[in-house]
Amino acid sequence: MLNGSLKVPGDKSITHRALIFASLVRGRVEIENMSTAQDCADTALCMQKLGLEIEHKPEEKGSVTVKSPGLAGLKEPQDLLYVGNSGTTIRLLSGLLSALPISSRLDGDESIRKRPMARVIEPLTTMGARIEARENRFAPISIQGGGLCGRRFDLAVASAQVETCLLLAGLGADGRTTVATPHLVRDHTRRMFGHMGVPYVEEDGAISVERLSEALPSCHIRVPADISSAAFFLVCAVLAEGSDLTLLSVGNNPGRTLVLDALSGMGAEIVRLNERLVDGEPVADIRVRGAGRLSGITLGAADLPAGIDEVPVLALAGSLCEGEMVVEGASELRHKESDRLALLVSNLSRNGADIEEREEGFIIRGRKSVRGGELWQTHGDHRMAMSGAIASLLFDRPVQIDDQDCIAVSYPEFFQDLEKVRG
Image 1 (tube, rainbow, N blue to C red):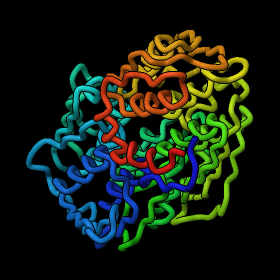
Image 2: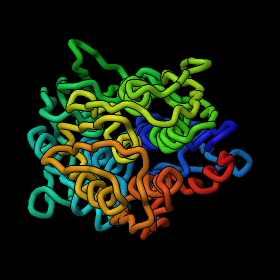
Image 3: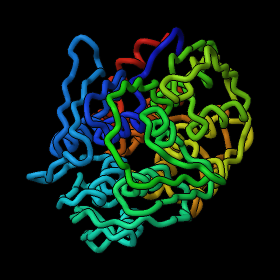
Image 4: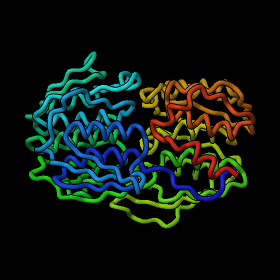
């Protein structure tokens, strides 16, 4: 069981944006409660190579002061911009760099080199960016930016990363750039634009920007706790009878609440307390009590953009539910740090869950207990590793995780925090 209260580290998605959007400011950006993830550290290093100065405050963990020359003052990087394992970094920076009259080259680890980049390369090219990539769709990517023209993009797949990439390009393009998505996506970019003073227009769900005419003034950004990191504790506490856990200051963005909505829909007792806005982002303390076995649920393509990264840990709730958990329209999971669909199915099957893989999802027939005790492969995927750690607490026997070190990509303090709240 999990008891007490816990504040997980700052939100990764918002931290990436705070660091990259700081380039729109001429002056200082104070960032508080920044994510400690390696992904975000890689973003910070990339931005330093472009001319930002980032000073960590030793007395305040996760707080930094960024000194920025503004877009016009960014410099051409002298060497490779290495994004590590971060898909957010490479996609968002592709948009920013395409808007600048400089040459740059982006690359990452083995996982990044397998991630599809055509979804940003193709639209950026239509705006006028000159981009070269391996097989025209994989990193490494070389960009010669500048000279862009705004366009309208109606995305076939809802993606906050692609939306933000194109909006960043639009801030350096002639004319108007408009991006429309088919489903609700996390709107961190819109909220941070509003907080920082970036002019934009929303109409019928689409967002439009024009060239940023002048640098933004100095500002302060407080990052809420990461709901994707909180998800592992939420699932564990819900399923472990006797748990009473409160997760503090968690980002409650309407485009990120799949884990809360799904668990509540399965019968979990979840209460949002002290709801408030923090620099434009909705935040709440989330109290969850152990309910034991939950009911089944069906999640479809319209649900998943609100938390597709949380599907692996939600599958643990499905493996122990009464009835069936059906996930459909989740092909995006095949293009993450690993093929999460195939890997999740193989890990759960090997450990005794009744799960059947489908082309774009899976179906789990819940059981009263799952035996565990077998290998849990990660393929270097941090979320798969953390899901394995939670499986070890919920299954009859701990699973054997083949790589725990990869968790540092998003949550270096994960095991330390887990120990704090284990009863």
